[in-house]
Amino acid sequence: MIALVPPGQGAAQDAPATDLRIYDIIDAASASRVEADIRTLADFGTRNTMSDTLSDSRGIGAARRWIKEEFDRISADCGGCLEVFYQRNLVEGGGRIPEDTWVVNVVAILRGSVEPNRYVIMSGDIDSRASNGSDGETDAPGANDNASGMAGVIEAARLLTAQRPFAASVVFAGLSGEEQGLWGGQHMAAVAREEGWEITGVLNNDMIGNIEGIDGVIDNTIFRVFSEATPLPEYQSEFWNYRSFGGEVDGPSRQLARYVDMITDTYFTNLDAKMVYRLDRFGRGGHHRPFNDAGFPGVRIMESHEHYDRQHQNIRVEDGRAYGDVIDEVDFAFAARLTAVNAAVLAALAWAPPAPANVRVGGANRPSTTLAWEPAEHPDLLGYRVYWRDTTAPQWEHSRFVGDVTEFTLENLVIDNYLFGVSAVSRTGTESVVSFPIAQLRR
Image 1 (cartoon, rainbow, N blue to C red):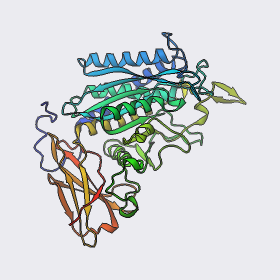
Image 2 (image 1 turned 45 degrees about the vertical axis):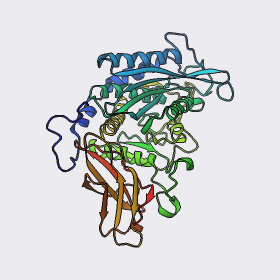
Image 3 (image 1 turned 120 degrees about the vertical axis):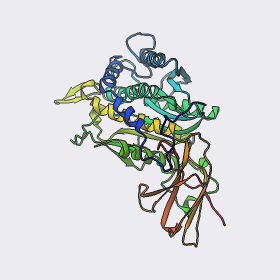
Image 4 (image 1 turned 135 degrees about the vertical axis):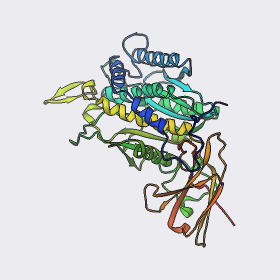
C-alpha cells in the first residue's frame, strides 16, 4: 500500500489544525495559466453544443479535442497518472437541441491508491451560447460562462497531479450540453450510478471569473456556494424522519457546502464562501443538479456578483451599453483563487478518510446526547470529531476531537436544543465532510 503520510507527520495524538500540503497547492495556482486557458477556449469562437465539430480552430469539436490534449499533456508530465477519455451520449432532437446531437464530455481520473472507487469530482462546462441557445453559428466566446470554470478544472488537474498520491480518486470533468438541458451532467451521473461510483462530492464550477455585478458592486473577496437542503425522498434514509427529528437543512450536499466554507476559512485570507441555501439561482440550473437528482452530493461554486449583460447575449452595443461574454471582462486572478479553493477541497477530501457511516444519535428525555457510528476504514485514520450547533445556526458552531472511538456522549447537551454530526480525521489534519445522523440510537 502506498503511504499517504509524509515522514514525521504521523505521530500526532491530537488532530492537527491544518495539513500544510494544502498551502502548497494553493500557492501553486497560476493566474497566468488560467488566463491562457480561458483565452484559448474563448478563441474557438463558439462552443455551442450545435456548433462545428470538424474544424480544428472553431466550434465545440475543436474545443473538446484541445481539452483532451491538455489532459493528456498533464498526464504525460506525471508519468501517465491520469485516465483520460471521452464520454459520449447521443441526445435525440427536440426542444433546445433541434436535431440528434452527440453530447461529449472530456474526463480525466487521478485514480486513488487506497479507495479507487470513492470519487471527488470537479466539473466545468465546455459549451457556450449566444442569445439563442441553439445557435451554433453566432460568435459566443463564453469567456466567463464557462471558459473560466473549464480552465479552473484544467488548472486543478495540474495542481493535484503534482501532489499525488491520494487515497480516493479525483475526477476532472469537462461537461457538455449544459445550456440545452444539463445533458452532459445527466449522462455522467447515470454512468456513475450504473457503475457504482461512491461519490463523496461534486464541485460544479460555473462562472468563476467575474467580480463586477450588474448591481454595481465590485468585490473579489467573496464567492457563492449553492446547495440543496436534503436529498430527494428516494435517497433519504428510511430510518430518519426529517419532520420529527430535524435536519431539514442538513443533507449531504449542504454538508459539502459547509465543507467548502470550512476549507476557505481555514486556508485562505480575505476570501469568504457565501453559503446560499437553495439548489441554484432563482429559476435556473447548473451541472451539479443532475448529480443531486441521481442521489449524489454536489454543489455549485461561482462568483457572487453576476453581470447579466455578459451572459447568454450576442456580442453587440445598444444605446451605449455593451453586451456579450468577452475576454476583457474576466478577472483572471479571481478565477485562479476560486480554482485554488476547488483544488484545496478536492485534496482535503481525497486525502481524508471517508465520512463515518450509519451515524445514529440518541438522548431523548436525558440530560446528555450520545452519538454512535461505523468505523471508517483508512490507513491514516486518527479518529473522529463530533460537531454540534444550535438548531437555528446555519453553520457548525462547536466541535470536539474524540479520538479513535465509535461512540461518544456529550454531557449536559440536551438533544432537543442542538443538531449533531460526526467527521473522520486523518493523522495529517484533513477530515471528511460531516455525517448527519440517519437513525435514532435507542437504549
